[in-house]
Length: 368
Image (tube, rainbow, N blue to C red; front, side):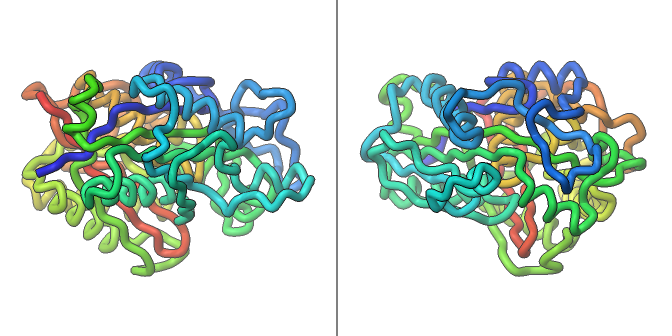
């Protein structure tokens, strides 16, 4: 059967440019959350945020973060640009309307890169947008519609999304502590991400890396509580993605885990149920959001970047800012790097959830 492989990944996070900077920060247990230099909003009450430590003069932040992440992903894939016959999937808010309001520009878009000549679609599924975009792109490749697809997006700290998260009391007064018993909510972050997907034979024919595949996906909308996580829905989503991948094992989960009391509790309950069904007693689970904050629509692209490195290095990075893990008999929650199973880790799940009943899980596999 045709496989969809990941040939390039790029990110911008509060650690700076690149997957390398993200991975180093995660494995060193650092957090990039703190007092911002640029972000100013009357709705913020001193809570720490994850701010990207650079700007491009004259370029809106979302556009700059998207551009840098896309350039890294294309370079990693060995492509000079997005092929004109590719599918380009932009994830995020609706495109900008052209108004000159800086706050609005940081909220909407980013716009599709002006020099792009590929077929383009825009997908928005709240904080699960990146996962929905990757699932959509994979389906297009499997259907034979395209050989290559690029999923990308950017997010910038802005008062609109900040006040919306504050209104539902999701924002923590202290640095986010995903999976920790003392967690009190999310920290918002900013950045960008891009992932290049290709049909496996197409990638191999041009000499690109083809060891890592998006082997399964499950996207669910409208089930459960639209404003909160639901353990039964999450469990169903993860199990459906594993079934889609034909996976008989699960070695690692990069969890959505934002640090909210309710959300993390329901996700852990769901993952415990999955581990029980698979007969697992020590399933590694971690999250990047205690280090970078929650990058909303593009958070899954950052998760995929971290998962790709974890599978290729055989190491789970751990969850920065996690010191008192929730007790679990079947899940391994750690704040420090830990080895994945010694018999060559091959299968990981990346979970992604959002308001409005948006639930998604991707399954990544790596060849030995």
